[in-house]
Image 1: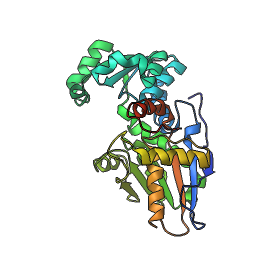
Image 2: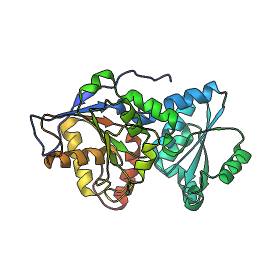
Image 3: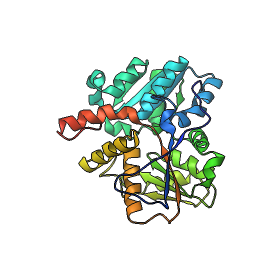
Image 4: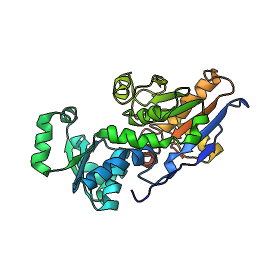
Length: 305
């Protein structure tokens, strides 16, 4: 892909209210790859887009919600490579809100065509019947699953870690669909521990991740989801804003903000071994902040700065 970078910048970070000379914290700035197609979205799409182009597809179809980083990234790739993109969007009511929703408005500006479906229909999106309906309506297309996770996505995410990163004791990343963590696990050495901080309630992601990995040096941490996917509160907002003020790095509220909040809590509880070197993956997702702030403003909560 035209904006490919071979290496991300590894940047030392400080966490609010935590100081320990024997713990090293480094943030891998995958978010700096591209303004929209950043972090794990670039990694997940890299080989999928190459495969679609090499296979002669002229249309890419994918799935997502109102503020999906994946939808925005696929739309941006479509505009970059002059490929038609179709987004199957969860929630029929969003059809009337495209121009006021920053993510959908951006995707539309990139040329993405939308199909809005009910949440009930969306739960059946992986069925053969639904696939036939899409084929009849749109013709032949290259399908990428919600969140982008498939075998090619995992292959791309394996490239996040470099040989130099093998010196770290812990690799930490946020988890949405599990593809990024699976890639990190596959690329890790057996003596490294890979921690995945789930943005969703429940432990069902363990099964999804296990489909792509054979190693056992990983753990899914599920107590820092703040109530579920895209749920946040004042404590998390304050943490994100404080982190930016100290480190001059923006975190997103759905994934990386929750992960680093969790890492700080675990550090304060001495859950990392003394002398540890911890590599934290910044997976991007910053485009969703504008939409989140619209919600926070409606709820009269502090905004993400």
